[in-house]
Length: 110
Picture 1 (cartoon, rainbow, N blue to C red):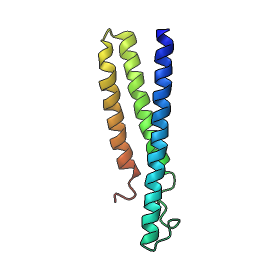
Picture 2 (cartoon, rainbow, N blue to C red; picture 1 turned 30 degrees about the vertical axis):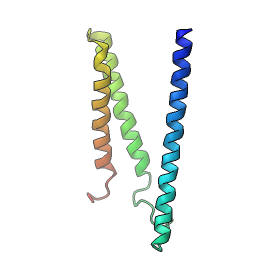
Picture 3 (cartoon, rainbow, N blue to C red; picture 1 turned 60 degrees about the vertical axis):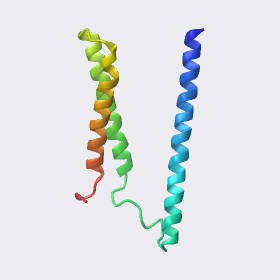
Picture 4 (tube, one colour; picture 1 turned 90 degrees about the horizontal axis):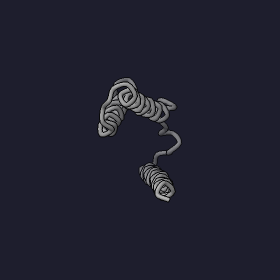
């Protein structure tokens, strides 16, 4: 009974997070498109100079989080550390991967 409650709460939470992510991303793109149209620019011409830059950033972040999860697993399996270290390790690896993704996403150092 308790396990079913946890699974259902997790499912609702993940679904809500995914919907809110999509909503705010869509809203930001619409505002940006309207702003460009008001300035007299064509939104289709202002595409990133580096195609796939956003996918590169997402990929770097996913790899960083995966490395953090692997590190947590290894510590948990072979070194008897407390489970309380999992979230800080994941946060640090995610933060480092975000910094690397930000540096990698810039074109020609600009």
